[in-house]
Image (tube, rainbow, N blue to C red; front, side):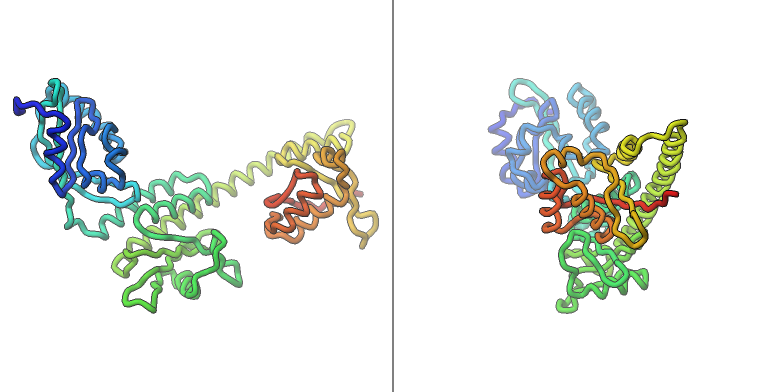
Amino acid sequence: MSPKTYSQRDLRALVEPFSNPVLVLDGRGHVWVANDAYARLLGLSREEVEGHSFLDFVQAEERSRLAERYQRLATGSPLDGRTQLYRVTSLQGRMSEVAVQATELRLEGGGYGLLLNCLLQAHRPLELAVAEGLVDTSAGLVSARSEEAVRRVALAGLERAGFRARLLRWEGTRLVVRDGVPPPADAHLALEALSDGRPVFGGADQAEPTHAYLPVGGPQAEVLWVAGPWVAPRHGSVLTLFAKVVGAALADSHLQADGARSRWEVEAVAEMARFVAQPVPPPPETFLARVADLLNARAVALHVVPEPGQPPRLFVHVGLEEGSREGVDPERLTGVLLGVSLREEGGVLSSEAQGRALESLSGGRFGCGTAARITWGWAG
C-alpha cells in the first residue's frame, strides 16, 4: 500500500475523468467516492450510492462472503491483486458482468480504503444474460405457494430480464388477458402456440419479431405474451424452457391447493357432522353461525322453496342483522346475493353498477368483489 494519504476531494478528482465505473470504499465498506459511470451502472444517482455499503449493490448470494472478505482485508489480510468477475444488477433489472481490479489506499486520517476499477464485459453473450436472469426467477417459481404467486413471480422475472409480459387465458371460446386489457390484435397466434406447444413469434409489420407467444399450459390453458428488443428466434429455447417451468409451477400449486381443499372439506364435513349429531339438534341460527365461522363468511342465509316451482324464500340468516337495523330488507338483499351466485362467474360480483346496488342494499357492508356461493339441499 502506498504511504500517501488521500482525501475525499483528491479521490473525487481522481475517479471523475474515468468513463468506466470507479469507486472507493472506506474501512467500513461504505462507498466513499463513486463516479457517474458507477452510478449509471446501478441505475441510481450518485447521492443514492455514496455513503451506502457496497454490499447493497452486489448479488444477495455473495453478500455474506464479501462482507467477511472485506473485513479481513480492512484488518490486514493480504489483497489478491488478480482481476475478479462479478455480476451487477441495476435498479431497472439490467444485468451486467464487470471485471474488478482492486487497489489498496490509505485514506485521510489513516483509515483503510480500497479503489475498485470496474470494466464492463461487453463480450458477454446476450442469450446468457437473459438465461441467467430467467433461471434466477425459476428458483422463485418453485417456492411460490399459490397459482397467483407463480404468475406474479413469472411476470416480474420477465420484466427484470428486460421484457414486457402478460398472461392470456383460454376460456373455451375466447382468449382473455388476465389484467383486463383487450387481447393483442394477433391473439390468434396465441392459439397456435397453445395447440402446437411451441413459441410463435409476432410482429409481421416489422423486419424482426417484436413479441412472442409462449405456451404455458397449466390448469387454465395459459399463454405468455412476451415483448421487447430481445425477443428473437435465437432466444426461443430459453423462453420456451422458462414457460415450461412456469407451467410446471402452476400445475404443482394447483395440485397442492386441491389437496389442501380436499383435506379442509373432509375436516369441515366431519366438524359439521359432529355439530349436528347432538342429542338436541341446534337451532337454525346456531347452525348457520357455525357455518359462517367455518367458511370465514360475513353472512350466511338459508332459503327454502315452499312448493315445487316457487321461488326460494328467506328462512333464517346470520350476519345481516347489522344491515336490518339500518332499515335494509334482508330478504331482498339475500335475493340479490342468490342471483350473484347463480349468474356471475365464480359467484364474484365484478360489475361496478351491481356493486353500487349491493352496497346500497346492504348499508355499505357488501359491494364490488363480493363473493357469493350457493349450496343446494333437501329436507324431509
